[in-house]
Image (cartoon, rainbow, N blue to C red; front, side):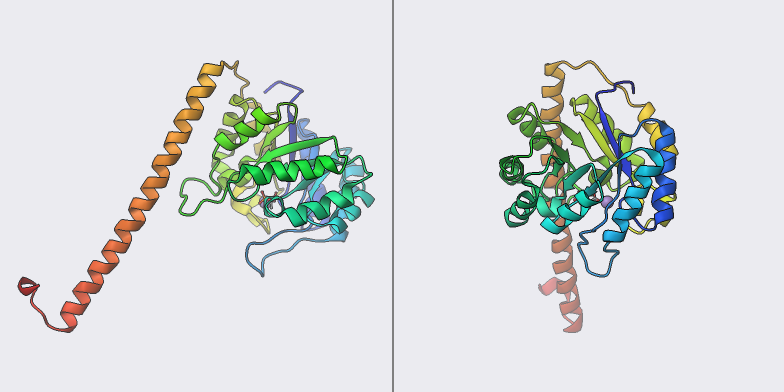
Length: 303
Ligand code: PEP
Ligand code: MN
């Protein structure tokens, strides 16, 4: 791909050790493609017991990685304290995660801490497919006086969804782009797919839809990652995959067609999941009937 206007954020899901972070950063720098080094410092875990992040000491690693490579840095903030700590350690871009943008109290807390700063803030879509929550989060940050804002499409939790870790539901980010044409929209194919083999397929699709950039998880040794290992790639894989992306010339007709097709496919997926789950429950009941009959030694022909 050859377009300087696209932004590329990359780095590990989590800062694990100083060495892991700096080694990854140096390799990312060497690709010559990356604008920001990302690393999660506080990790929102769906279940307790997972790695919850390095905390403030991870911020000093991030600062050292920045000094060593010259890359700008990015991390996720979920509270006012995270904002303060990150700015103290010169983090250049803060993003609000999907489990935070879903909660107006938390977003407001972050927004209050941002007042009076000139931070760059990107807002991930909320975990559930509610565009109003996403808009609300954006407006809270803008009302705090932050002008350098962006949006990150990372897909939506979808009960029974099978194809991806998070359903892309492209119609939602596209509607956000229509409502806020001046605000950059970037794609997070790592969290949409949950699968390193599909990252560039989704990246390409987002570029076809005229997104402004990508945030892709990368790790010096993806299989050893402490979080989200199935979706991380090496800096070398990032370079190869990224360079193979193509910027197509777009026609509105083709975009409309793609969107409508996606929406219909999504509806079919949804119905397939429902059908499968109904068939499974029917089979369970039929098995129970069989058991009941067997236990009562009842012959089939009478019932
Ligand atoms: C992350 O970026 O590592 C992360 C936790 O993302 P999300 O908020 O999209 O789940
Ligand atoms: Mn992650």
